[in-house]
Length: 345
Image (cartoon, rainbow, N blue to C red; front, side):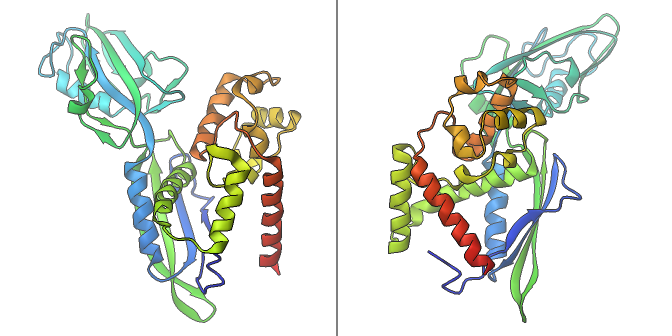
């Protein structure tokens, strides 16, 4: 459905303020919007950002010398409750699925901090200066932690449902990578009319995901849920759905427009981008046709780059090794170019 032809005012664009954009903060503006849509979209995206994005967190802790949460540990300033509270403040990023085990072993005197945690290459501690415990002279602090991916808030009771070894204490987990979201709606002008909306959003993340990626993921989640309410479609929508389905087979019922994007939009490292260029990978459709093993055979392309790109593709609803109908991709690309040309005229 072409909403512009039906008189709807759609936003010209939505963009982040590049001057203030960081890996943990972003200010997004979308305008102009039909009156009321600023609040509608702002509320929806804000709720999804705070509750539905995937992140990683500690789910259980085992501290040598502690039988339960009310225990105290010899020569350690904090009791177990305070230590667990400090551990829950750790911000974590995982590059793989499944459970990972992290360990700590520190001798006093001194402070135990996030950088003392021993993890494998698939896990990053994003706030290494986070205090965990304070040790007196002669104290030895040993701990083991389970780290997993999840969404939103999960209570210790739910984390207990997994079979835990003796001495392992389940903790509350906050998986959401988004720490805070503000939004407000201002007046926007279109010609002489001033009753349109201008949506402004501020997003703070923990660094495991950028504000841009967070908003993209939230928008994708909202879009996927809205599709179920398309109970009746006009001929234009039905024709597009049918042609898109034929183009991608059974794996994806709707053509994914991300396939037409340039790989430049993936925010790759210089090394990874050069690998793509040398392998003649120009758009994302070229990329997803390759299998993971094929990508690893690319000169100078390593496992770390593979995992980063894999995560980006998953956020777009794509993955490696997809079967792509090149005829359909070319047809959609041509249609996109025509649309841009018509808008320009």
